[in-house]
View 1 (cartoon, one colour):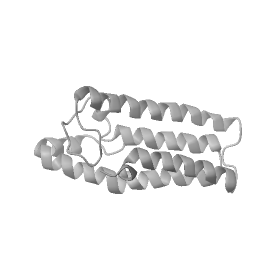
View 2 (cartoon, helix red, strand yellow; view 1 turned 60 degrees about the vertical axis):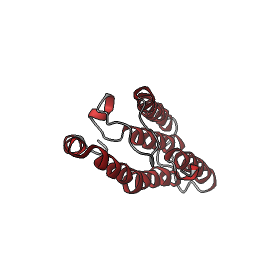
View 3 (cartoon, one colour; view 1 turned 90 degrees about the vertical axis):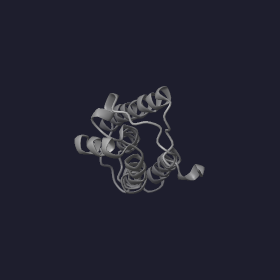
View 4 (cartoon, one colour; view 1 turned 180 degrees about the horizontal axis):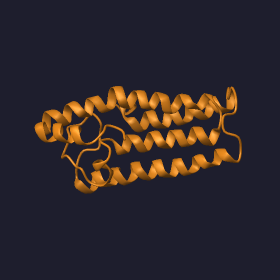
Length: 148
C-alpha cells in the first residue's frame, strides 16, 4: 500500500492546507474569538474517538489499514452506533480545527475529508467486509448507520 493513499496522510495534509488557507486567504470570520476556542473541545473529542477505536483494533488484533483484508468484525464501543467511528473522529477533529481558525477557507478540509471517506475509503472497506463476512455484515449495515 502506498503511504499517500491512507486516510491519516490525507488527514494531516488537509490540516496543513487548512492552516495555510486560514493564514493566506481567510475570506471572512465566521466564529469570532473567544467562541472559536470551543473548537478545541471538538478536536479533543475527535482525536479521542479515533484513538479509542484504533486502540480497540490493535487490542482485537484486527487490520486497521483501509486497503488491507479485514481481520474481524466488531460491534464494540461506538461501532454499535456508527460503522465508522475512526473516520468520524478524524472528521470531527478537522471540524474542530476549522472552528478554532474561525474563518471560511479552512472549511475545505472537513468537506474534502468527508468526500474522501464517504465516497472512496468507506465503500472500499464495506465491499471488503461484505465479501468476508457476508450476511453478518449485511445485518450490521442494516442496524448501524454509516456515520451517525
